[in-house]
Each structure stands twice: as structure tokens, then as C-alpha cells.
Length: 355
Ligand code: ADP
Image (cartoon, rainbow, N blue to C red; front, side):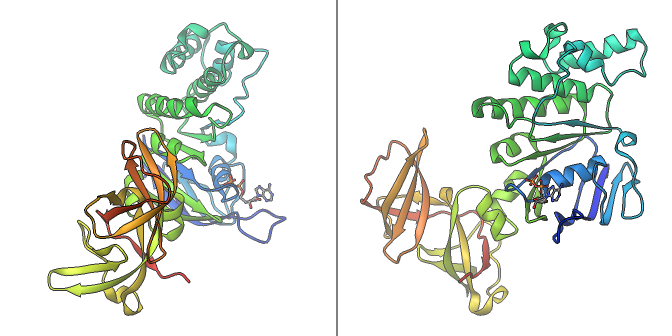
């Protein structure tokens, strides 16, 4: 593994709680990892510890097998060969684009420096902007130049802290896809921090979900959505609700008895013995539920939100449970109407019953 973080603990001197607590993950060379979580969950602290900007109190950080951080050892930030891109582009206003990108290349002679500047500006699609100044560029362009500047010295690892948060929502997702393509073309290994799921999905090979300093899951986007490891991940990623379920053995396998009938997934159901009496809560994603006029189970539409190609309906079963349901937008039902629904789950995901 290229980057290996093991049981990392970081606590600020003036704080009684660890900002990062027992976090372990690793990245292979050329992979992009993303950390996502609500404000204050420890994402920035984690990134700063990897950069060498924070001392760590527990665990270790290894870069290309070398320990760069442990409670006893601390390789200074400037010796780590790590590049950083922050949310406030922070281009030098008195230097033009080429001057900004050349800033970290003083070890090269003039010819090699000019060549590298052209190369990375080409890579980020800003080849024609050599002579322009930051105030002559849009936010998205400035961020591309900041990325070129960070990539120019060929850092071993690139860290990006919410680099798109000052940009328009529309631009953000597009730029996230572009930045992924640029990082892949550069063969860069990168760690990225965001609070935005679409951005995380657009950019990451692996995504870590953090909460209160702890890493709840380190996985690809599909697994986070379909096989969330904790209730927090299930709630944080995507739309879904929990309904009470009882797991029972049937002749041909385990089924989950729910207010929507008996459910089985494509893959194995958790065993009834996982929970006292098989009683648990089952995750139902909005796309696990299908609107079907012939279904015996009816639900009442409580709320609806138009999402372009579909509606997100909030529905209530006669038994009281609330559900979220994606329905193609040509099925335009009124709030208060009762419609037929059935569950079509691929993965039975359960958690301990919560009061
Ligand atoms: P995030 O980037 O996910 O918003 P941070 O890493 O910034 O989270 O913060 C994690 C926790 O550490 C928060 O509780 C925050 O208040 C605290 N914290 C961050 N920076 C400092 C600091 N310099 N001194 C003390 N506490 C800090």
C-alpha cells in the first residue's frame, strides 16, 4: 500500500475529545480516496495530520512504507513531498498563471521549468492562460490552475480540502469529474475531503464516511449505498428509512417479515440469530420500493418533491411506518392519495432495533 494510516488518533491540546479517533485505511498508488462526513467530524484534521501539519497522539501514518507520523516521529510537512489544494484557490495575485505554476519548481532549470509548466497547464485544460492573472480567471479556472500548481512538482501524494466549495453547485459536480480525469491522467495518488456526496461519488475510488472522529466505513460508492456498515452511513448516504422487521427461517432460506410483506435479497439475508428474537430494523431505500397499482399493500402520499425525471414521495403505510419512494415523474399522484407499493430489494440490510 502506498499510504497506510493505522489507528490514527489526533487530539487538540485544548480539547478533551479526540478529533480523529482510531482511524485506519490505506490507498494504493494511483488511487483517489475521499473523506466525507458532516461538519466537525474530523476530515480536515485527518488531512492535516497526513500533510504533517498536526502532530498525532496515537497510531501511525506511512507513506511509501516510511513512517512519516507516529507519536514518537514526525517528518516535517515540507519533507513529505505532498501537494495541497484548498478551497480558497490561494493563487499569488502578483504572479501570472505560469508564474504561479512555476512556484514550486525552483529545483529545475529555466527550460525544464517552462516545459513542466506547459505540461501541467495542458493537463488541466488551461494551456492558453499562461499570461493571465488570478483576477482575470473564473473560480473554476483558478481552481484548475491551483491544481496544476500542486501537481507540477510531482508530489508523492496530493491532498485536496473542499476545493470546490466556493463554486456554483452546477460547476462543482462537473469539475469533480474533470479533476478525477486530470488526477488519473497524472497518475496521482490523492486524498480529498468534502461534505458533498455527489462530489465524493464523482471523484473517489474509495470513500470514507466519518462521524465524531471515527471512520465508519471505507469502501466504494456502491457498497456504501447498498451495504452500509452502520446506521449512520445508511442515513448519511442516499435516501432511506428503517422499518421494523423480523428475520425468520423458511424452508428455502431466511426471509425478513416487514410491513411490506416478506422480503428476500439477491444475496444472503442476515441470520435470525444475529438479533434477539430475529427482531431488527431493515433499511429501505427509496429505489427499493416500486409503485404498483396491483400491489396489495397501499400507502398514502404525505409529501412529494419533484426531482426532474422522478418524484421523491414520502408515504405512510396504514400501520404508521413512513417510507421514501422514487417514482417516475409521469406517475403524478396527489398528496393524500393511496397508491399500491411493493418492495423490491436487492440487498437485505439490517441493524439492531432502535427504540
Ligand atoms: P471537519 O473538517 O470534518 O469539519 P475538523 O477536522 O475541522 O472537522 O474538526 C474536528 C473537531 O476538532 C471539531 O470538533 C473541531 O471543533 C475540532 N478542532 C478543529 N480544529 C481545532 C483546533 N485548532 N483546536 C481545537 N479544536 C479543533
